[in-house]
Image 1: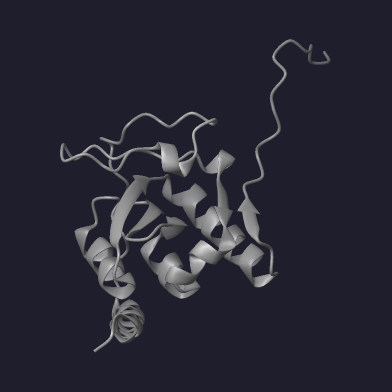
Image 2: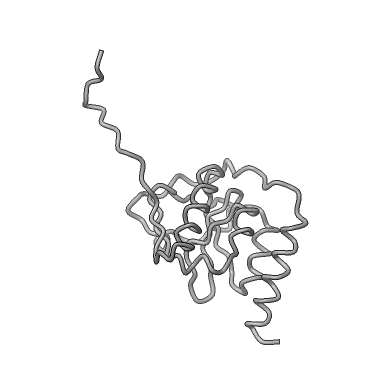
Length: 160
């Protein structure tokens, strides 16, 4: 069986598992590392170390080539709360609500034929980012760029 055939089979099996999967993903880890700075890109963040501490993702400053989303169908991304952020030769870097969910990581590794390098992200923000990123891909946009929240202006007086 060729590598492409194995990846197709993996995707089919992943989608079937998701249809029958009824349990929600556990909450994200409280042991996650501090958020990365806005100036760092996905490539600059090192892979998760063996210590179990997982780097986090700043979803407000996220930029993703929508072509990277092709490794995981939208229903699977939503069901697993996983957002593919970068695909390299042998690694998929993903944002996950639960970066310690070994079953989800194993399923994604099997489906893609690539190692998965997880990053922690808050579930609510992640689900919104997943929807926005896949919407951008469906519109044919080459990139998903997070809409940053409006900056606060602490020096401005508030009317009394």
